[in-house]
Length: 362
Ligand code: COI
Figure 1 (cartoon, helix red, strand yellow):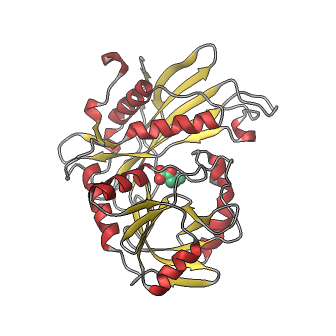
Figure 2: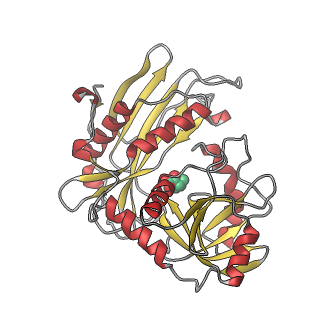
């Protein structure tokens, strides 16, 4: 794939690492390519970051034919830039795309696009501990037509955003709110696809949660309103009776890459691990009898985020002493250590930007 490149003449000021927050800034360039059934993926290009021009009837605006991903690039101690399991993000993007009747993106295209885009904007990769360059690959339906059917044309693009911690509280315990009224996904729906339609409807609930001082909503299953599913932006883990428990991937929750990494590490460390259904009553019971030792969420944006309190049916339940637990800390240190290149990478998860395969080499 030959990527056409147009460099910006107006470089934006690069924000200081301090106060980056999450997703407030975008870099100087973006990657785009188009899809039609006749031509497949074509016109791969890197251009100055700009608005998109779309027909108001473009199908993305009406029927939510959209998928996206989130991954990060890390400034390593040497001069290289690291990525964390980017192939997993592409696999998930393609799984989501299939669910939304959209075309898949070939791995070689994806990796080459990442490599060339991040290289052009490498000055934007922040270097302070805990910061990174968040990468948002996105695919949208572009055909202008109002019938409810799959679009015939698509745009795939990648934008970049230098970020700090997802939560303002950083790596400190959060309060999460359990919704026993609203649900995020049901079996047979599209809960496991990373598509905007899974996020928009959650805003109503998270607005109320945020107004009451909670960082996130913890969703329960859509059938019985009983079993824990996920936090809207991350997966959830319970350390209960010396066992690490997380809800299984049953089609309603997002198959997190950090989730998978936590499970792999836990098994490697010899921790008892169980992917099983866990009810909110079991969680509250565990808090009351002291058998619930820790709760933490895992995600690309949130990394590992300890949960200090769980609000359920009008009561705030404090998890253990409400502080960051040792296990959450250990996962955080290990995963960020691998990501930032100051720990060994026994599973081969880290990719170096300089060594990302490009199609030309194949
Ligand atoms: C991520 O962790 O990358 C996410 O996509 C979560 C959220 C920011 C949408």
